[in-house]
Image 1: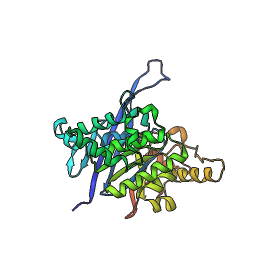
Image 2: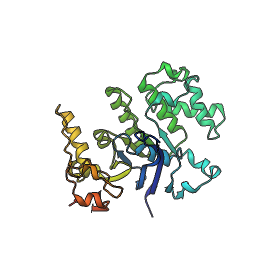
Image 3: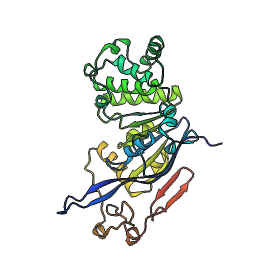
Length: 321
């Protein structure tokens, strides 16, 4: 029997874009997600990491059905939810919840916190006021706040307190999978550690599965069991945390890691770029071709296949060995 709670198969998503350098502004397709496949096991935290614009948030939105994929499958608890109608999807929606980067935009500024939370419970047909209050009171202590915060408006809360409320909102529907999208990037460093520790303790206590999306390799290393590295809409490397952090093979992952280490040591980041073939990149090239310090002619002629290094490590690179 498969142990995964989520299986993503060959996701594709493109958006229309315009060439701003052309007089006629020709419309063309921009591939945000290109043939993405991965699994999340029950009770596992998988870290999805990459630069801004690499497509990781789009993947999260496709899983939560906030965005429709062009093609591919999202299989949640054995059901292909990408093929379900809105009616059939309704009972499943509450089982997959997303925590967003900016907590202020996720809370209605005109509602007190208690009403915001009750609206979430009402959406899953919990309408009895006493039952609503019991559930809210049960969870408010789990996120490190007291009942006094329920009578406040969002603008009366700090950034960290708002994010705690957003975490509570996600938990109220009793989900089995959480998509956490850059949940600490808008917070102060001291608050970031508190929120990360809170998420980790809740994940263990409630046996949640989680896709943790971030651009910070150190944070993902602390939070996740496995790491998936994305670049320009593609997965270029994946494996367990120790394997990726200490034995990464892809030049892009090495660049991410070196930037973290350089910042810790207060050194300048020196990015090596092979410029010999830089201006000749074509549609069949490796996505990292024009930035890779090891790029060779084959990298511009053929996309690399997914190579299995070992049971815990895969990579897309012609020079994986």
